[in-house]
Length: 84
Image (cartoon, rainbow, N blue to C red):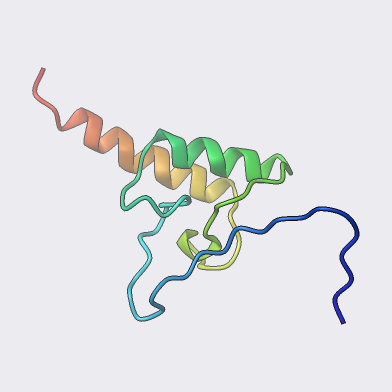
């Protein structure tokens, strides 16, 4: 049984389980960016963050500081590849 008191809402995301999830794409926006690193840091700090995909973590289970470091490593390589 599910008991709900007062107003409540839920956000539900449905995705095809046959498609691969990009490691580090914490918000599932089809790419790695600084927003993913910030969200991962918020999760590590214990904040209640909605719209995250634990499957996008390196170990496919838990978002941890290693995910933050991975994301920063990847986006720094992208940044350094630009010809200024």
